[in-house]
Length: 128
Image 1 (tube, rainbow, N blue to C red):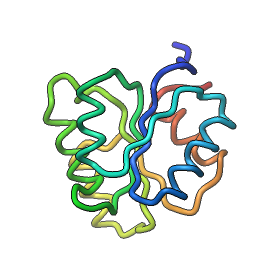
Image 2: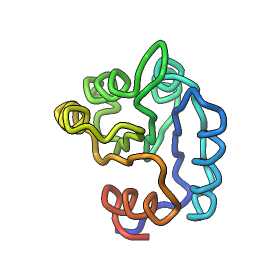
Image 3: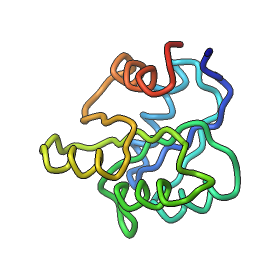
Image 4: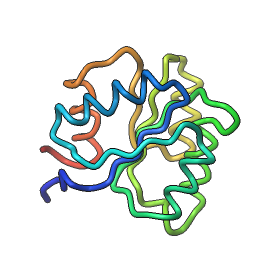
């Protein structure tokens, strides 16, 4: 099945620069509809208000972290099917295990480039 390049993608990070970097990388990959949230609770509101085909969220945010957001998404019958990629500066195995247990679709360790992002998205959505 072909990847819908016009699907809504939600990027979640409390660091404005990272939101801009992610938006630019997604544009390079030809994804056009990128939405931003600056923390997990804002992201959750947005996810409940409109349809998204992918969530890319930072782990370390206040007040709601990326792992808490992931758990909320996976616990919600309407949202649990959405592919969820976690972005983190931590590559500690306990974090990877916690994210996997919470139902993460894939995991990206910072810093990363467009090729890494493409590969991670392709692994959860299929080639594009």
